[in-house]
Image (cartoon, each protein chain N blue to C red):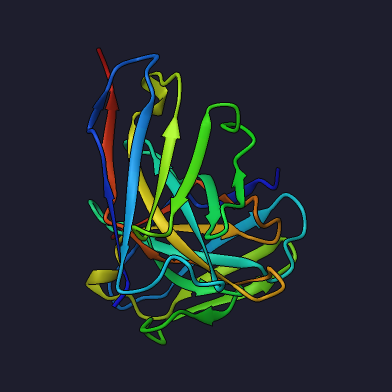
Length: 108
Length: 125
């Protein structure tokens, strides 16, 4: 099983600032990496797939980068609606997919 | 607009079988372009993939749950279902159904891009 490790567990950032979230895979997943945003009481929403491709309707302030085992989600200028929990997911080992444990992005 | 909706009992007794159904509307479950999956999330915890199914009935399961999971599809009703046997309190979670897009060669195009709202299942006597 490919283990996905996200850091930090909690990130405190002020609105308008940049947030950088990390995800590491226990073995290479090429670019088969997705990021999801989840707000309380809601289902996860797909933000990024293919490590760097924004899903439909996702604002340009969200960007993803990386390949192999190291990945980053960057939110360039945090809006109030961006404070949520973010999960990475590998699908290189499809159909066996695995998620990271999540990073909670909170208001500083 | 594609919509997915989970349904089923919100309370299941220990050792019994959890049964949920996902109804797909606004699109066909029989499309060759998609797999359909179940993902769960224990209260306050992260996401765990349970398994996925193709319209033909081809299934894949999380090895950690494989001995207890059955996923099936009913194309006539545009639904797919989850059964999880011998449940314990550790199976208490919000259960989501979701769609994943693939190419004709079975390569993932987009991972879970449409999700149901989720349904909380509590295992308790």
